[in-house]
Amino acid sequence: MPEPGAEATRPSKNAIELRNVGKSFGAGANAFFALKDVSANIGENEFFTLLGPSGCGKTTLLRCIAGFEEPTRGEILLYDQDIASLPPYRRPVNTVFQSYALFPHMTVGENVGFGLQMLNRPRDEIASTVNEMLRLVQMEELRDRRTSEISGGQQQRVALARALAPKPKVLLLDEPLSALDLKLRKEMQVELKRLQTETGITFIFVTHDQEEALTMSDRVAVMNKGDILQIGSPREIYNQPKHRFVADFIGDINFLDAIVTECGVTCQAEIVDVGMVEFLREGEIAVGQHITLAIRPERITLSAQARHPCRIENIVYHGTDTIYHLRLPNDDRMLARSQNSEGHAPAWQTGDDIGWAAAPDALAVIADNPS
Amino acid sequence: MSRRAAGDAKRWPGLALGAGFFFAYVYLPILILVALSFNENRVVTVWTGFTLDWYKLAFHNDAMLRAAENSLIIASVAAVSATILSTLAAVRMAQVRFTGQTAVNALVALPITVPEIVPAVATLMFFASLGVTLGLGTVILAHTVFCIPFAYLPIRARLEGMDRALAEAAGDLYASPRRAFFKITLPLMMPGILSGLVLAFIISLDDFVTTFFVGGAGSTTLPIYIFGLVRTGVTPEVNAISALMLLISIALVSLSLFLGRSEHRY
Image 1 (cartoon, rainbow over the protein chains, first blue to last red):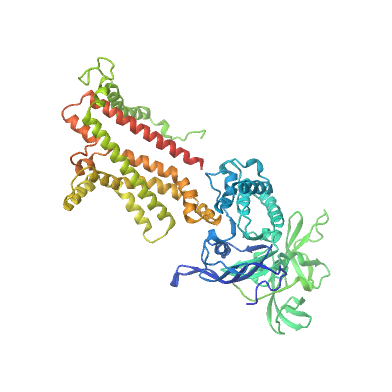
Image 2 (cartoon, helix red, strand yellow):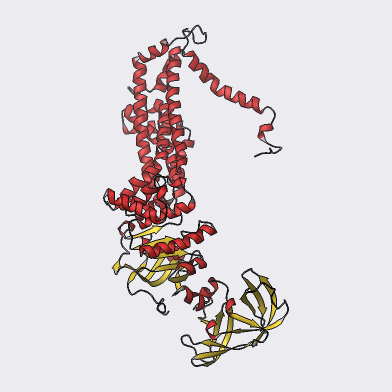
């Protein structure tokens, strides 16, 4: 496996370094490998997202960094210091829990001050930090309320303020927005990004929501079945997925099976019964090799004159754009999306024979791993 | 619910009558007992006038006072011991997962369903075979044991309803396990612990069978003393003592209900 993250730009200093981290539950034949062999470097001040479906190991990885789980093997370095053996209360990292886990017998202010109190900070310092943190999340008026008397969105902000108050080196966020409704979630996405920029703290964010991952992160690690499949900027993850799973998990995508016919600076491949397509060279590719190319629906250009023929099977209107369900001559299906820049109905109808084309940089080469 | 279903229990014929009969059967004797404890006449069933004399008499009855003192000592020590043991057990049971845990939980609660006479006889045989002199000590020991399930159940229920992430959050925020326990877990468990304590106290205060078997000289409790009095005939004094016990029980149950209700604050 190539070194994950090598292709992405990232800060020079590592806040967290994961080296071959593995975690299994149970033993023998019943052992379950929640994390297989995870390596990644997370830079200082980075907004780093662990993205994957439920059960992919993202939360387990976060809990290993927090100290709630002990990895079965591998090393976790925090600013070059191995923290794998430290209990959670000795690690300068704080967590925002999915359930918020606010202390119900304390007020909002007491919750936010708890970490500092446990660090035995002076009383006046605690008071001023609590006020500062509550101002940061716009919750100053609610300082003396009980946590049961405030709304879900407000609890979310308190949980954030509580985790930020001890000024951790790394903030861990375990699907913190999943309990909020859509509108509030969008607000909090912007808010979280703002907080991260303002505080300059490294954020490690766990989510199964690909849109959330793309909009907030500096870099995203896509996980499946206990492994990180690809690390990259949202743009790279979206446009140049290396794995079929990554491509499929994030948004709609079309897969085309092709045989390489020529490979120079750009490569040519033939899709049987469809025709020749041009794509950019990516890694080791040999003439005659069977490959899978992936293309996003919005990168497909439709026109009557385009070189590859297709037939429109269905047209679905989505408001901002229109989705065309296409059938290729080799009987494969393909999705194309075009933006509705004008108000009138599309020029084509279901059953029309038209053509499609794709720019060379729109096609990504997928490593052949059917998992 | 705005519309009642056809099979609604509220429409069954004779329901009010049945319910009325039930409540009368349960509570009327108690009310009559309390009323008669203020009866001037020595013959229990003939009302001649109001008096507090029987209460005065009871409070000057040394044997009764000793029995009351024993009852309070036994109930306090047994309830507190049982609650501490149950708290420790419940905390540990919530922390760990092991095979057979459900069975262990069931075994802790099982004594509630076992006829009390069985463990009472067994405990007596146990003490006898060890050659232990029966007295206050043996009663306290036996009471502690049978109080444990009553204290354990509300504490465990409270702990099971608690978000495990709370203890993790405390650890995450630099609280050592010890501080996390005293700052977070224990305060949140408190309503359960207090309900358990009150329940255990009442169960112990009220106990007759076990006390009768494993008690000895100097360990006469109120229920045992009242039983002794009744054998020679019910007097208004017995009514007065019973009414006082009822008062204590009601006060404690009210306290326990109040504490139980305060759980909803969290």
